[in-house]
Image (cartoon, rainbow, N blue to C red; front, side, top):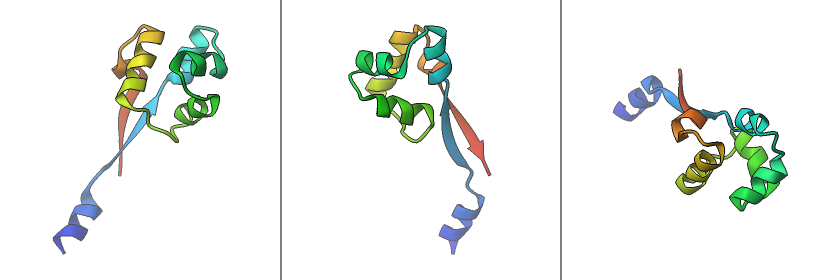
Length: 80
């Protein structure tokens, strides 16, 4: 019974990102970014659409490419 109480009242955290915005600032295509990251264009697309949460290493690579902090690219959002 305690378990169900936890599920009912626990907020869900989602991660959103600004990869597409940062990529556009640098006039970069998904393919360009994918090559720099060493991933497929589909992976970049999935990250931009919040269907794929990148590894820490990938997040740090994005930070270096866009010359901003990981926190500027990824934000946690709480929902009910």
